[in-house]
Image (cartoon, rainbow, N blue to C red; front, side, top):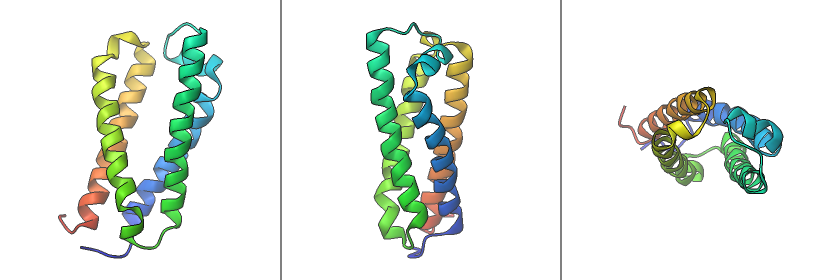
Length: 130
């Protein structure tokens, strides 16, 4: 196993940080986000958007800390958490594909797949499987 944090892993976290920051901001502005997904703005969707914004804020902050980390052991659990979150997001995105607007659903699935691939590759590289 590689003890130091590889550049590819840091790059993956950097990419995730940038995307996560954008989504964090968007979900904290439900008027914009809800319409992107083709939903009606109600008290329920407003509350859900803010809750998802908090989720993104947490993962975005963890990616920032991971970029600053030096060793694999400092970020290993974050990579595993990201993979689980992204797998869950991919499954729910596919199951609920028709619920959202085509643009919102396709964009979310593409970003989820790209990030999932990056985190899986980072994990495999860090444990010397590639």
